[in-house]
Figure 1 (cartoon, one colour):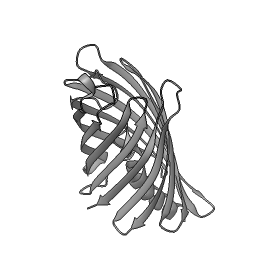
Figure 2 (tube, rainbow, N blue to C red):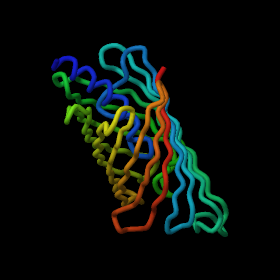
Figure 3 (spheres, rainbow, N blue to C red):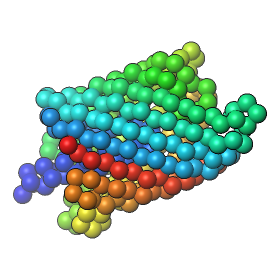
Length: 242
């Protein structure tokens, strides 16, 4: 029975840790995809903040290989409407960035995993107006799954160091937790912070997800909680496995 719980828990955790970071900043959790598997994850959000209104979109494709290896490519974009104050004369401000990464996970028993990931960063940073150009990110993640009252859940913790362009160095931390609240329904909560060059932000997010076979959809709420500035809005996410 323990082996069955462990296998189910890891499968559930690998899926939903992938969903949890949809909205920034993480790409994946402590688990890589199974060998030969692919996962597509997308999100779109509308936020109101001190600068006006912002629309953000993310698309991630993750691949699994033998030996706990994985790879992923993520494209993220942002559009701030006129009057945001970020563009010259209140012009529309649009940003586009991407990163491509390689990940290696290490099983820690039946229920836990540790992973490291190295990514190349290109284009513009969505978090903050002054980070541009190529760079890199180094990330470490630790996750575990659990069974509570017959429901599967997970906890995932990550830390990252990133450098992009000239004089743009940042550090990030994230914690995410989720649990199955009913058949085909999951709740995920997470918080993350990013500090360093042109960045001082701490956000919290809660999301409710529903399974539709190989496709899952989620609706969540995200809000800045650092007190440095105001930002809040809705997030819609979707993922599909292949």
